[in-house]
Length: 171
Image (cartoon, rainbow, N blue to C red; front, side):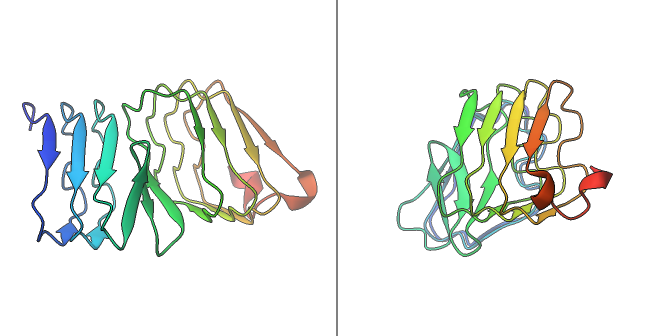
C-alpha cells in the first residue's frame, strides 16, 4: 500500500480488522464512517505519515478530536496518528484509559497531559516517542502495563510516589 494516501471507507463497513492498514506508510488521512463498530489492534501501526483520523459524527462507538481516535464505550484514547503534527497533546477530561500503543511512534510529540481520572495506561502506550520529554502520571493511575514508555530516551516521568501504578518497578 505504498501509494495509498487518503482512505474514506464507505458507510456499511462495520469492522476494521487488526493490522488492516499496518505499515501503509504513505497514508496521511483516514475517514471512518458511522457504521464502524469495531477497530482491531494495530489497525494503523506503522502509518508514519498518518496525520489525522476523522470519524463520522454519527458513529455511536468511536469519535475523533483534532484527528485523534477515541472509543466512547471504553472512555479510551485508541490512537494518536504517528504523523500527528502537534507537539503537545492534552487528553480530554473523562478519558479513563490510554490503550495499547495509543501514542506509539508519534515522533513530533514532546509532551502529553494526562488528566486526573485516567486509571489505565496500556502496554507500549508511548513506545518509540523519541522526542517525548515530559509526562506527569496522575494519582488516579493504578495500572500501567509493561513497556509503556520504552524507547523514549529523552523522557522524564513524574509520578506521586505514594500513588505509583501497579508494576511501576518493571517499567
